[in-house]
Image 1 (cartoon, rainbow, N blue to C red):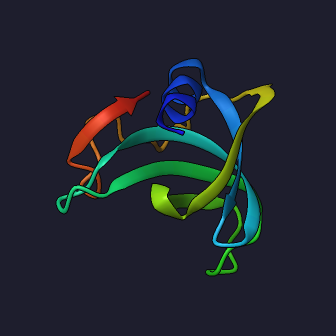
Image 2: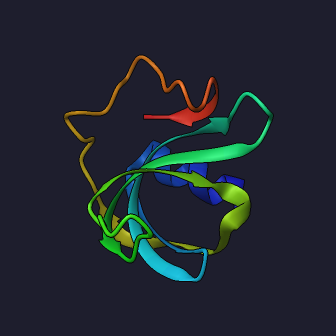
Image 3: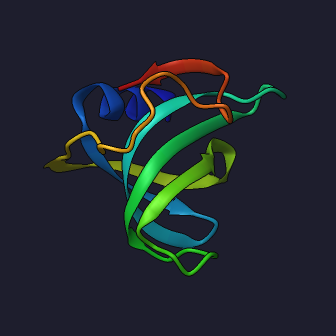
Length: 97
């Protein structure tokens, strides 16, 4: 799963994930470890369900809760509001745009 996520970030490829029982389409931007060593993925969700009822928004996904993941045959552009200098929720970055 880590290779798929890193590849999608590096090549700006949309991902389809099953997260906590719901299917989502996301634009992955950053991937790494939080302060407790838990793998997290920062992405902009463009389709799918969301507990917050806001399906189009920045989300922080716990990688352990992703049950299925696949690359889609579609690229995305970096979001203009993406913080290139870092992500306080992911202090140890593995891959980022």
